[in-house]
Amino acid sequence: MSRFVLYFICVLSSALALVPSAAHVMELPNKIKMPKAEYLVARQLYRGWQFVGVVVVAALLSTLALTISLYGQPKPFAAALVACLCVAGTQAVFWIFTFPVNRATTNWSTLPENWVPLRQRWEYSHAASAVLNLVAFVAVVLSVLWASNA
Image (cartoon, rainbow, N blue to C red; front, side, top):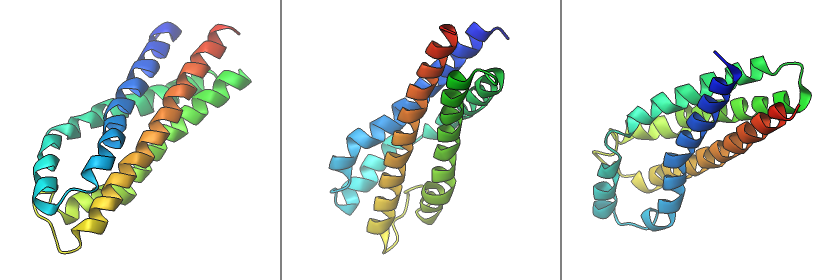
């Protein structure tokens, strides 16, 4: 694979991974205050979003490949490593915080008595992932720019 193709895949996949997480952050102020019935309705908008996982896998694998390919170029390598670690961090956040809430609520088709703290955990875990995705995207862009100017 040419380095140009790798750069393109890294920038595209990290940008696409940022889109849904940024959407969650932008929705958060309105959704966090919704009453139970309205929140359940709003949650139905996320049906099919599990396919975003394909983009996340692409971002993780491509940033890993970029990191490996830039070994020996300190600045681009460091930025690529930050990007890869941030994308991996989004997965840690998902599996530690988000996924257990999805299971406890049967993917938000039922709400247990403790649904409010579960909602907070779910919403804020997505906000944390958005920050990590933003840092990853910026790091990928910097890595590509620094490697291109080396």
